[in-house]
Structures are given as structure tokens and as C-alpha cells.
Length: 536
Image (tube, rainbow, N blue to C red; front, side):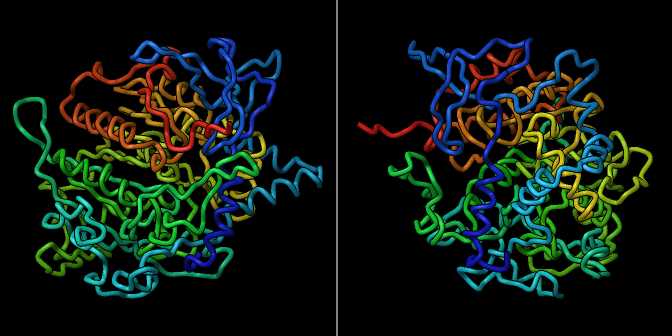
């Protein structure tokens, strides 16, 4: 997307992608979980009946609360670990290569086109030219909006509090396989964003320790884009009796990218206020970063380690300090490492939402398991990378893999990897090896379309390190959760991160034992548009 005029076409495609498909007659849960107590006519963003458990609220009332059911179940008599064995990279590619039904293949190609390749998100600077840059060019880093920009009227964002601690950073990284093999491009691109210098966090021994949170935003999100209006861009269309996107409302007209105020406040600022250093940069193909494609999450995961290495060596690195000094190369080496000598010594937490969750998950796999360059035809990395990553914090999660999504999605992903050399959705390698991660936090809305709620619970169950599973009554995007649920999730994620660095137990965070308990744990606040209007 080059500018906002193409936004409607993209919205239509994303609305198709965001619909969670499951058998209307069930089964909705595995045979180890309680059967649902009923069905609920769910509003935004699914607009159809979902299975639900009856929950007793703190005031004594009870109501049916919906959740995302299973999309696929093992065939009768299946022996093995279905959600792992049938959804590895090798398994999904084998199914795609063996598919001969032309109608089915056409459906796969049509679904694949809903996330176009190549594609870019370039909204930053469309409302205010200050901050608009050529992402593929050599630029003055002073052109990039700083936190203080968002503190002025009419934005008045609290992220401005961190301006004195924020450096603008630029990293140099190679082009991805789709660009080199399908577009004939070569050379390197620049990734740009912010680094916030923290004061340190408690180490559990009476002192403090410097630690870094790498924050990966979701698809479409651009770190320095404007959000002026907080009005949700949806409305109730009575003729169709469903919630739909409102492209003419102020939710679009006054924003370059909707949801950025919450992202900057409840993620970037929240970690910094807790004492962490924070590194966040636009993904390739997004905002102020270069790249002709926005969806290769494996390549975007590798960019995290390229950035960490650059902070150590200075290679391909430029830093604009809060005082306005420009540092580059050897002069920038080590300046943002928090006093550590090597990038691999820095205690790191990686976090991400939606597409950022995919990026985070691939990064954890690279660091603790090994290579996962499945879009390249062969995996060349053999050993874990070995950085000092302490945990992952996942929002709008996808880690349980393609088995907890509709069956067509695994064929779409296989085609994307084989035919376009782009790797986006998570195959089951994450689910199979989550026990090697040192810690994981999962935060999601109960009817998030990213994966079945039971898939998220399975990731939680298989994880062996410190962990937490936090739920709210809401959809995929936290932008519609409402202030109470957003604050609830933010406070729990920060608590988890602090517990990780101080080696504290997670007993003060939700630890559901069942699917029903995961639903019951969500606080009694309904997200915007979840319930249907009174149509009397």
C-alpha cells in the first residue's frame, strides 16, 4: 500500500482473513475439555454464533461468554500428535504438492491473495508531511518523528514523557528472498525506529539490572504514524444486522494508522516506565523502514538479531541521540547496549502482537532450537543462536500453529513458502519445541481469530519455564477491548516481565487448568461491539 487511497481494498481482504472458520456443528473442543454450555450471537469482529461457557460474574450474575473453538480435529482413530505431526513445514508442503483438484487450488490462490505479495504499508506522513521520508533512500534521521511530536496538541500522547531518553536508530539489513528471487532486487535496506534508555529493573537481590524489551508491532502498525481519533472505526449496519468497518468515519479520516496511541502507550511506554530499555523499529515493508514486502515474518525475526549485533559492532548502524548527536559505525558501537560488552550478554525479552507474535515466535525458535528458513528451500542454520533471551510475551497469538486454524490456511502457507518464497504463518515447529523456551506469556481476547483458544492453552500447557495465560472478553485487536481490559492486560504483561528479571514466581498471574477456567478468568468487561445492539 503506497497511501491511504488503497486502504479499502486492503480492508476487504483483511476482513476475509479475519473470519475464523469452524464446523458449525462442532466439535468445538477436544474430548478432554468441558462441552460448551451454549451458543452466543457474537458481534464484532466475527458476526456469527460462537460456543460459550456460562460464567458467574463478581456481582453474582451469570452469562454465556464466547470463545474461539477448534477449527480442525484429528480423524477418528488417529495415532500420534495430530497438531504437530500434520502441520510441520514438511507436512504442509507435501499436502500442497500433492493437491490435484483445480477448484481447490483456485480457492487456495484466492485466499493467498487476501494477503498480497509483494505489499507495503506506507501511511506515515499522509496526514502531516513532517515525518514523511523515502524509506528506500538515505535520509536525515532528524526527519523521523520523535516521542515529543506526539505530545503536542491534538495528540497529547503520554509517550512524550520518554523523549529525553529516546534515540532514533537505523539498521542496515539484506533484502529478503522474494525481493531477490522474484523482483530482481539486490543490496540492502534500512530499518528505522526508536531506542528508549531505561533506568533498570529490580534484579530480585536488592539491586537493579539493565534489560531490553524488543517490541514488535502487528501488521499495518507503523511506529511513528498519527492517531488523532480514538473512535473505533466500526458501526452497526442494521440492514445486515452485523458490525462492519466504517471507512468514512473519523476513525479513518483523522488517523494515519489506527491503534498507534494504545500501542505506544500500553507497550512501548509501559515497559520503559517499568525501567526497561526498549527497542522498537518498523518491520520491513512498513512505515519508515525499507523493503518491498511486509509479510515475511521469518525474515523479520532474523532482523531482531541483526539489530542486536549492530548495537554491538556498529556495522550499518546510525543513532540520533536525544541531544541531537549523530553517531554511526564504530562511533555508535556499544552505545545502546546498556553497559554490556556483547549483544549476547544483554538480558532480552521479545514481545509482539499478531504479526509481531509470529516474528517473536520465529525469533525464539532461532535462538533456542535452530534454523527455520523454510521459505528458502533449505535451512542453513543448524544450532541455536544463543542470545540471552529470558522470555517471550505474545499477544493476539499464533504459536500453536496451523492445526488450530482452518484447513485451507496450511495450504495457503505452503504455497506462499514454495511459490513466493515468503514465510508468514507459524507451522507446528513452535508447538513441538515450546518446552525449550525459558518463559512465555500469552495474552489474548477470548474470540481472537488468530487461533483456537484451546491452541493457546496447549502452548501454555507444553511450556516448561515461567508462564502465564491471560484472557479478556474481546477480539483479535486490543484496540476494541476497552480501557478496563486493556489496562488489565498491560499490568499483567509488565508484572510478568518484571518477575522474569527478578526470578520471581508467577503465582500472582493467571494459570488456568482448563479451557473453561481460561474463559472464567477473563474480567467481566465486554469489548466494543461484542454484543449485538437491542433491535426491539
